[in-house]
Length: 332
Image (cartoon, rainbow, N blue to C red; front, side, top):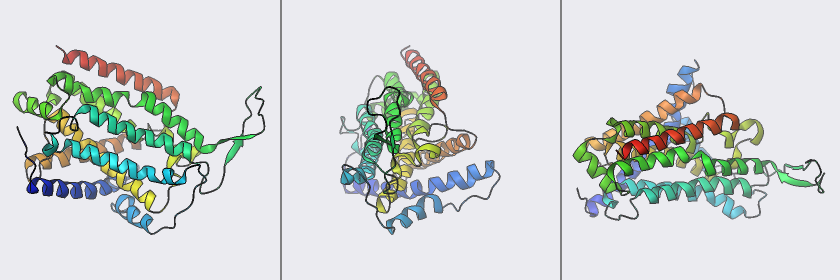
């Protein structure tokens, strides 16, 4: 299997990117209108309002200046996240498989880690909520600084984001490497070629378990209920996003939908051996899978509360242990 880079291939990548962005901004509306609203027996918003029109609306809103030690860096985080997701998207495109280091699981994991770190930075760089300083005193017993305004409400979001980076993403990363164990390669070209010769990993025991663990990690990295602890509205408002307004919030909406679609492409490549080749049944299958995953996620989220650490830790540990078991099965 080989894909050469040419003008036609570059054009296909650009068209695929446009389709991915368009579908991505529709996915939030599909989740809320056709899944969550139906489950919760309400009408729900129009399909285009949650992602598409929300992105356009924020482009025309007035910017606010956050109370931050580095406001420029804080506001650049959504743009960085978009660039990272774009890099993952390009990595799974078959025309880039010849760039082995770029189209590899190591690269994808690295890009995803950068996306996760952005949440920690946003939380730590924001010292206000809607430009209002909401610091609170340190009442820790025995503190010599008792009564001083030393903490910011957004620090809660930052510390939660850091915990999610340390352990929360384990299931997804373990699932990513199960196809590597099965194919004995970390390169996407080899993983796809192996499945085209021997059948999709999804229909093997290790691959099926890996797909389930991938989906759990998929929900965690998207910070979706019940794994949305960094955006718990009751105590940290909107988490790291609160100070992002205007075009920066627009990037947040576009990037989330783009990431959902791109992770669907990653699933197709790793567990079905199907790269997103435009104007073929392969691309249609990739689109279908990229829509099925968020629909299932929305259905689960509609019934789920936010997991606290008491529920989150056991879920992550159990999922990680099952992922390790799948890797052991893949060795035999």
